[in-house]
Image (tube, rainbow, N blue to C red; front, side, top):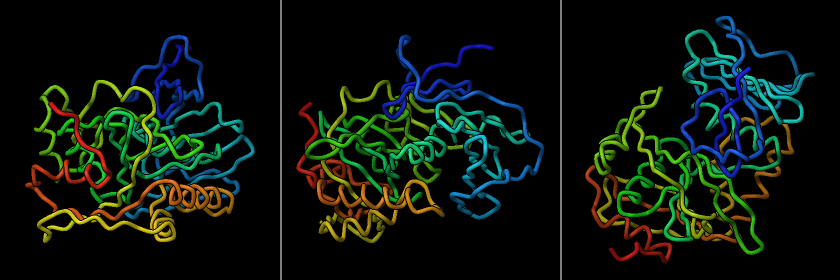
Amino acid sequence: MSEPSAYALYGLVIRSELPLAAPVAPAAAGGDLTVRLGEELPGGAAPPVGEIWAQVDFGHGQVTQLTRTPAGWSLHYATAGEFRLAGDLRSATAHPLPGKAEVLPLLLSGSVLSWWLNLRGEPVLHASAVAIGGEAIAFLGASGMGKSTLATLLCSAGARLVTDDVLRLRRLPDGFACHPGTGELRLRPNAAPLSALFPADQANRSTDGRTTVRFASAPAGLPRLRAIFLPRPNRELRELRVEPLSPVQASFHLNGYPRVLGWRVDEPRRRQFELFAALAQAVPVCQLHVPWGPPFDANLPNAILAAANLALPAS
């Protein structure tokens, strides 16, 4: 059996037979999770029997179910396949549905690792983040709220990408720091033209049809989380409006945008609530009412950074 490739992702070393769009881990690095590619499932395969810990229905047959089984855990995607995790969460096997093998790497680097981190006791944020020097700002919200679009605009102006869509945090004595993600921004069709802001060799297409923008490296070290912005796109606005939230308001809004949904057990929900409460106390949280494009105002990145008391380095 061949040795899986090692990837550095979210501060972890993932050894995987599935190819990931993530930085290569150092040769001597250990491994937090090893993922093998298993046999193909029959079409229409149902989740295994066991205790259902979470279930979420995104519509159009896209149902995700987390099941506790005698062998460990099953993370079943009704339209793509299944990831079977060992009880100690150190290894997993990916089983595609017919014709869906190419989708599994995208699921692994985003959804699967988000569920896996939650099972390990580490809730993650549904957020994209960029850094200026040693400070980071995060855009948090549901899919389609503009997180990746805003991160792309700031990166085009000189910020460094930290992560897109999945943000794992490290708790500090007086705040939080951000772990780097895949090094890739994934843009929805309406934001795809923004890829033209970067050299042509940075842009590509993902297996699910998204336009991607790839960056050479993450910021050195773990940037400190300076602010969290909840995007509120508005095509009627003419200038950026920043609405600071009190800790109580912030905790309420943060709890509205978890990275994984549908829990049927209490412990993960409790951990998530506690994380959001701690964030609301330690990090400024604002609603960001954004004049939406295209076209976008060329000064928008500077205005967003100014809301976090940051500025791009002088060129």
